[in-house]
Amino acid sequence: MQVSAIINCRYEGLLLERALHSAMRAIEASGFASECELIVVADRPTRTTSEMLAAAGRRIDRLVQTDVSDLGLARNVGVDASRGELVLFLDGDDLWGSNWVRAAWAEYLTAPPRSVLHPQFCVFFGARTEVLVHPDWRDSYFDPRALAARNAWTALCGAERQLLIEFPYSPINVQQGAGFEDWSWYSETVARGFRHVVVRGTAHFVRLKRANSLQEASRGFQRLPSIEFAEYLAGDDTSRPHNL
Image (tube, rainbow, N blue to C red; front, side):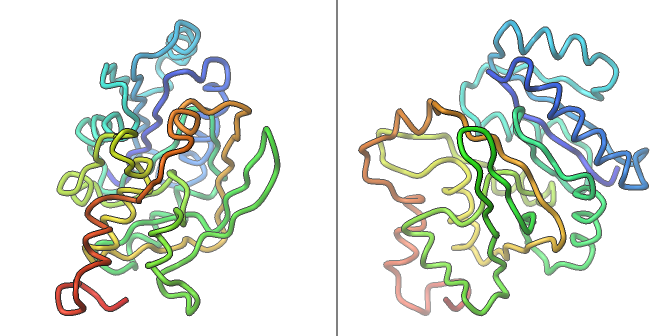
């Protein structure tokens, strides 16, 4: 199995249909659909979301029900259930560009070891519209120390399954003041010397909701990407796995 596409869902309801369609379209366009699997992780799904999953039926290769109530931990559950060499994440109200699976697999085959894959562009839509250009570790302007202030990439990444098994997502801890699950994981992987690679010519489409429960819950907190990354920045140069 080459690719495991993992969709995480909970509150998405009717919007989940579009996410499923975009994932299946990208898998079909890859040219190796028989070597791909589509896994949905339903973490305490709402009734409407469950109804959408029931309607999807055989279009989903594996449906995993969980009760962890945490997006990062739900992603870990999906990774445990996967069989593909490369794992690609999609949230249940977002969309992949049709060339993502094919292009991500091609990049994975040539990228340095311990690479995390990101689309070149993220198009935000919904509450507002804007475009984010993701940085690549090879870009001359990229400084990983900026992760101390803000996240550089959206959550819809790709990585080798074995890497995700060895370095799973940490649980969200709003009270601790640590960053969102993807920001924390990205920062911790940078601190371990992983490379964050952009897949040229690809785009994801991320829905911005008018109300975001996680953002609302964390409003007003002083936030760090992770405790590990804070310690990494405070360390001396010889203790760092790669030169900043």
